[in-house]
Length: 185
Image (cartoon, rainbow, N blue to C red; front, side, top):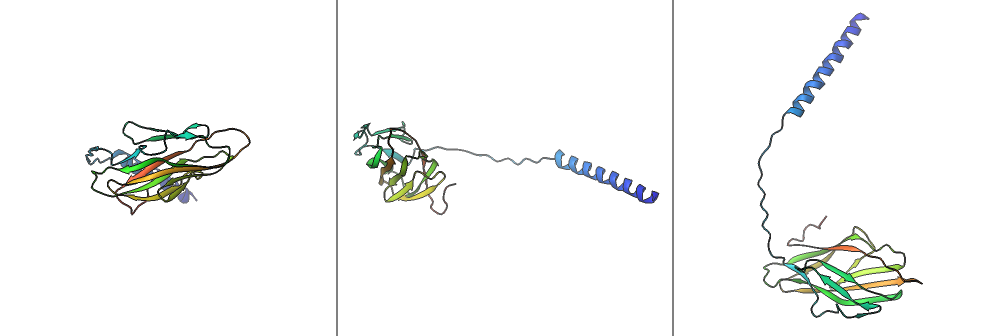
């Protein structure tokens, strides 16, 4: 019996020593390989435009407002739909590809935060012939491609059923890439 106890004690001590030695080796050595990263930004090839659209035109409760950033790379849209029925905001802005660009770009719309107000029965962003459901958070929808000098019309369709006034907002992103084999994450 003493032999077994001594053997167990030796086994426990060896296990502890082995674990300590292994953890010291794993934690004490780090090898660093250098990697240099250079970022060279360029003029944006894809941009938003409101020229020749219905932006700034009359709305049910005011004006169709489309505000663009300084470089036309972000947009803010405010509309005032009827609280009953379907309202179509046709051609409220355009997505354009710079005519000096030498390649085709592939486009997606990513819904980061969907409309979640119960009174909004349907909400669709219509880009060219593609429809993006603005009530589906997390969806990424391919909307096609755009060639140099090309443009796609952007429209918005909202169906609302409410007895009172209200509001809600959605957050989306236009994603573009020179390749079409992989969808954006």
